[in-house]
Length: 191
Image (spheres, rainbow, N blue to C red):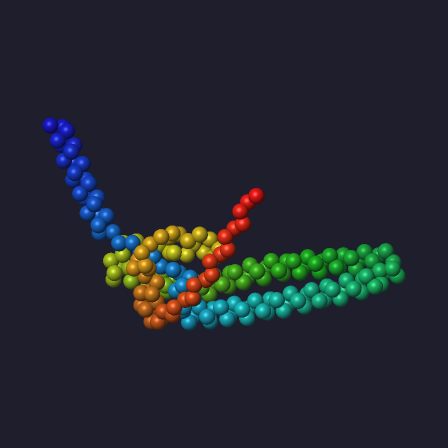
């Protein structure tokens, strides 16, 4: 009697599980693909490029100033007394430190600005992805991209599970075909 009860219970659980699995619809989106096709992303890219150029110009100015002062130091160090020589060396070291600090702070600032500018676009993509997922009865939607230079999160999926174009259309953007990137060269065998 107990065996029949457990067999019946197992059958009910198996049927319920298979019923739940039959209703699960999984999709994925390529966030980079969608982002690269948005006109607003091109504006963000242009603004970041402008800021980066400004930082690079300031950095080059600092480097030229350092190089000029260093050349002057090299040229005149033989005729300098010890106090002046030590002062010039200290100033040169301070300039080098300023250049390195500027490099680091400008890189950090650029990253923060990128995150700040992309945040509204990413939110817009996410909101539209949720709408598309609900309209098309997707239970789960994964991001195909794990980030530049990383392994994708979705390693294999049918093409019809890709909702990237649906999200773009929902956002009022006509998807453009993207040319495939060349495959990376295989690694040389280890000897």
